[in-house]
Length: 301
Image 1 (cartoon, rainbow, N blue to C red):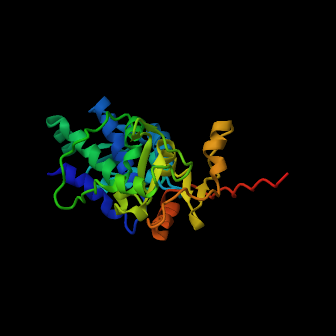
Image 2: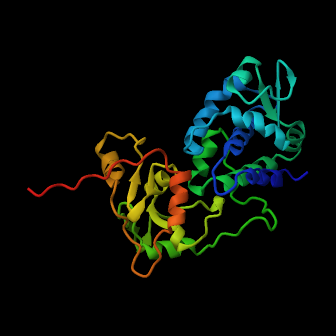
């Protein structure tokens, strides 16, 4: 059985660009726990809050529950659940899982394969990360689930895997004249740009193309906040800032809240701005909550 291929197939239930990374998040968490204790079970009542936090931080902006993947992942053949009622999930509800002392773990065949071939775990984790999350979140997500960093070079899946355009970064940074589209940062060390990255608006994992009209040149901070749903791009190519963001210090105000309503810096004339369809996807699938009202312009003294 090709377990790496099985990980990639978990995407098939996420249709129409809708983000639903419930199963991948539970699997990443389970792989991390497997590294700690290959024979241990995950009691739902003990891991519910961990899963809830993961879904809140890395899941879709709409409300969700950790009971969903705990129950439904059984049908993918990689996860098993038992409870006081015996083998199998007792139901989809939080109360049912708690009341019956439900516990889950990786399927027996998968546990056997991981023991036999330790490198398989890293390859599986890499596929789950690549297929469901942008690269800017991979390292911190591994840390969040207690997973040792997956190897950078994973076993390539066959023709089903798209190839990235390695020119994407250079094309996007050139279009935005090597300035962060949100704050204008344009730092260099000698002649080399530093701290500037090409962000996909519609994530590559969700069929976002490697085109300039799906990219933004962002500094490292704003790239991370953009991928976490703190920042977005609204009508008129103006910066959106989530009302859920809280930052009281002057740095948080200057770097985040005061960006609300600010027009993007760039792209240069002749370069394609962010396409409306990609902006709409990010607003629906990544941006969290409602945007803050635009900061009012100071009246002349």
